[in-house]
Length: 232
Ligand code: ADP
Ligand code: ADP
Image (tube, rainbow, N blue to C red):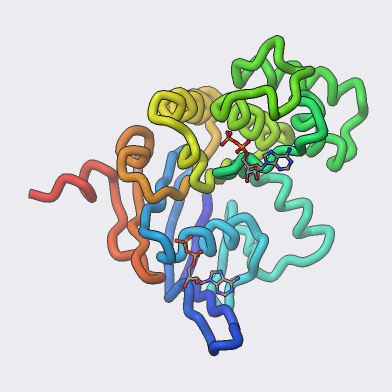
């Protein structure tokens, strides 16, 4: 589904080159929940920005459904990016727009007609358990509710992949569990492939099928969660 081959990413900085990712290869299978765990500075954000096509690798290739995405530009790039949904640690909602308007936003950008948009927004609000909150503003919601808006917005254009960037790191443990449960439901019911990055082991252990451990730009371990974390 998502295949990274020999990805290296070097940032040029005023202090010289920084090698954020070093010869990384990964294979995320369709329909799985794949976790990437690592300490701060390990390269997690860089990796997710590459998968989200926000950055291009210095070398190596990224393929989604066998199509090489690493060299796409312009319209084609935007088209492919619509197939990827993303949620964030700090939600990244539009604070002057209501819940419904936040969820509608990516549909507007994709040029979906108004009537279809309204229907879809209603569906999404129900899907994430926010019935009755469509007219609320983000500032009136709890952290967990804000992330539910983030999830609904990410799913608006029916992506094939959902990327989660420390999506529960700003939430308390109980809220974290309710969001993880929602992600599992989405994975099961919609068959959506999920890639999540986190520094929290329990997040990986509670919902991921497989995991890659990122350390200093290298994948140092990769496999099924129970094999990676249960050493003899
Ligand atoms: P993580 O998300 O695991 O904390 P990052 O991907 O943010 O790791 O960072 C990996 C390395 O790349 C770090 O050394 C960081 O300082 C560097 N880095 C990340 N983004 C940039 C950037 N835009 N410019 C220069 N260096 C960067
Ligand atoms: P929570 O209370 O769930 O932690 P916050 O309200 O603190 O969420 O918001 C998280 C992020 O959104 C922070 O980075 C904050 O700066 C930003 N933010 C919060 N309120 C606004 C606002 N009215 N306008 C712009 N950004 C905001």
